[in-house]
Length: 516
Ligand code: ADP
Ligand code: MG
Image 1 (cartoon, helix red, strand yellow):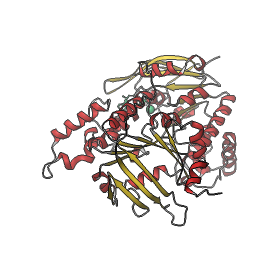
Image 2: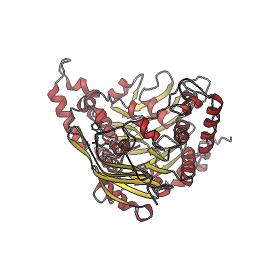
Image 3: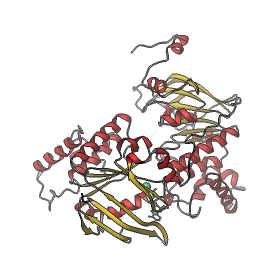
Image 4: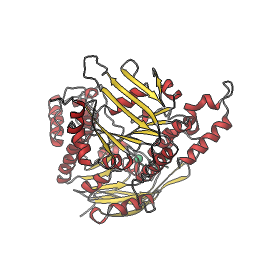
């Protein structure tokens, strides 16, 4: 069988630094080819070359055996290559139909064939099994529908090669299932799918073939069935990882943070509270895991504790035995709290500023003398924090934007670490980052707790929650439905509590079993 797309000997550098070195990659009709590799391995660059984003590369590309050299994204699209980037390309104020028709060959010189277009848009939605109102505005859709709409758009443009860059990261379990069934359908029609992901579960489930990039080189390419997890991880990180989740429990100390009757109202006053009278405490040196499905309220709980939802949060907070009034994040920071939010772009990294500036951003008061900045002291602190996080950057003077995703996450963590917090609120600290960087972050969590830092951890990855937490609270619709010790916790128990099942013994003890 002939490859739909075949890249040979692809090399590319940025400003003299080689990023890809002689990479071969192809995709056949009817296959899902997973492209794996640590952050910074060169995956996106390889895909962007296929998508016509760069023209200054060496090597060749063939489509259906024909030599091509797409020099613009538009041309790549015309050649049948659709790339769904993590940053979606939809135009939010426009309707579903209008978005589906963007770049459509049917739109010619103002001559709009409205009926044919709507029919085409409907057909594209039907093909991916997405049931949406064509006239609804995209901005009103949840992120998951937008992601799926983006795929419908690729189908609509009759792409034969569809590249998806971590498409599931914004999806809940149900939408991910929908995505997987769409992928199965696209496979059946003979399209070739390139799928970039860090999730082992997805690789096992979807991949026909797996290719691993490391430091710009292809280090392995095999049928998925002949690529066991352990070996895949070893190829990605270039060293054996004996332990995916190296939690070394430490003996918890005194209570660091106590939360009583904490509630967060929805932005719309009449709506149900997002967090409903939650009480919990976390000790020094302890990792308290917060489990739950989407909209469990866990993220709002952390944001509320941190003062990020002024006017909507209420309840009592105590830090190391002293009551704390938090009106804004500054109050929380002063009391030794730090929040790593789950939205990496909103984590407080200013992408256009240097890595050093970002790491020092929350500590300027301490680093300055009578208001005068001290560049040498800032550089010293950034270097120390960068090294402790194993942050990989050509230089700490470069813009945060140029870091790979995993290293951006480390910089965001570094910003809070520099402020020397005693209580860390971590909301999905490893989302969307590669195995090696994840492993580093687990090690760091162990080091922090060994130093007496208390951690509240939200993660949507069940194995991570089970392995890293000393204790787990499960939330459902704003309430805690279960508390599990490390030994009691299992995927089944966490999931059933996350779906709203109140642990019988607990509920009876509190005398408040609610029937719904
Ligand atoms: P991946 O997608 O595997 O995480 P990328 O292809 O995004 O990796 O990046 C590979 C390397 O190229 C990284 O070291 C990254 O910093 C660098 N890089 C990517 N894009 C640019 C760019 N536009 N300018 C300079 N360096 C870049
Ligand atoms: Mg990438």
